[in-house]
Length: 114
Image (cartoon, rainbow, N blue to C red):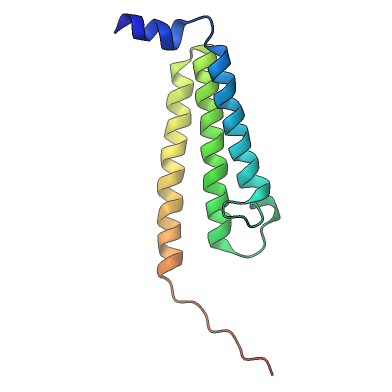
């Protein structure tokens, strides 16, 4: 167990996989903020679609949590990992509840246009 701890946490080369993890997190943040979760516009370019906005927010928060995990790994700061994962868990729980409520609410009728 001690050897595994050294390989993962204490190794001098830990910056390389941590940088790769941070890069993946930044890509996910960019995807959520600009490019969108399902091929549509991202969070910053989103119009009035609340469901798409929340899904893009989830992707962006996931990317931010990956960046926090990478920073915690590179700097050997377990509190940063705990904070990042805590925020990720809380936001995923909260936005999942909002998505459930939005999906179960009746849609307003669209007026017929001649």
